[in-house]
Structure formats: C-alpha cells, structure tokens
Length: 249
Image (cartoon, rainbow, N blue to C red):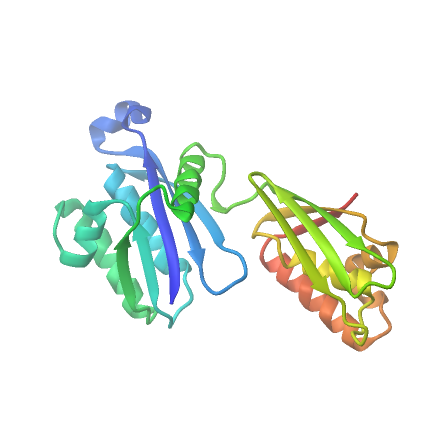
C-alpha cells in the first residue's frame, strides 16, 4: 500500500477584499511514499474559501499523484476532511471536492483509505512545511531548490565505498559494496549510488568524485562498454525525470 501525508495552509487576513467574496490564498502540501527509496514531496498554491477546502485539495492531489491501480492510505490531521471523505458528514462546501476525490480514485483504480495522523508525525510536519511554502509562493509542484552536499570516500583496494550526504536537518551515511565484475569502474559505482539517494528536485553537490566518474556522468557514451553505458544512461534518465541535478566541486 502507498501512503500520503497531506496538509494545507490558509490565511484569511491575506485575502484583503477577496475575503468578502469567500476566497483567500492558501497552499497544499503532500509527502508521498510510493515504494521508492525516498519520499516524493509536492506542494502547490491555490485560492480557497477556507482551510478545510485547501486540505481537501491536498487529498485530491495525493490521489492524482499516487500510482494508479494500487491502494493508497492518506493521512490528515483535519477531522472535517476525514469525516467528509469517510462518512459524507461535515460542511456541505466540502462535498463537491470530496466527490471529485472519490471519482478520481475510482477512475484510477485506487483503493482509498483515509486515516488520522497528528501533525507531530515526521511526514505530517514535512507536508505542513510544504503547504506553508506553497502559500507564500516559495514553490509550486515538486519541491525544488533543495541542495545536498555529497562526499565520496573510496579507498584503494577496498570493496566498499562510503557515501556521506548532508542536507538541511539530515545526515545520511551509506556503505556501498563495490562489484569487481561490474562494467562500471568503482568510482562510477559509488557516484550512481550517491545519486540514488537524492530527493526529487534536489541538487547534489558532489565532492571527491574522480575525474573518470565525472566524465562518465557528464557523457555516458564515453564508456566503451555497453553494460556501463546502459547503467549510466538509465541513471541519468532517472535523475532527469526526478529533477535531480548533479554538480561537481
């Protein structure tokens, strides 16, 4: 089962005269765990009559972003949204969006479940931060402008590479086995393992990458071995699809 944590941010005072017409600027955010090694973080800005509507929009975007044909459990800390979606109770203003959520889940063959989760839970806090940032216009869509510092440590003769990744509020250390039979040289194996740790939309600033690893990443066709080319091209395509940028220092 896939899991999504959703939240919204809405400020009536920001609407000015718009508040009299029932609209104010808000944001929604979600953290989607869909079987990948890292969560997907997505947010967007919207006009909404109240916070409940913005929260239901986050639920809708989770259903839209999740893989089709797989069960999805959505976590929210908003009881109005949960009661509207699960029991058809609560503010009538939520019903059209609730119907849209259920119709989309049916169309995408997603078995939908909604559960309560407190904001103190890790991914709920992340969804809340995404929603606030989106409301303020700091990002829209997949989270961008994130950076991580990566250091590669390969010791001559060792069968392991050590990867140290540092991003805001997090430090990741990984030991990666090096395969002597792999067509990729050890330095390139370590680099691809580091890239696999990136979050969507993140820029990796890689230190201590060998000249060979840099050259192969920048131009996979420089490798004369078809197996190495295939691995490099696949890794580049996956990174490009996730909006991951690799920079060398």
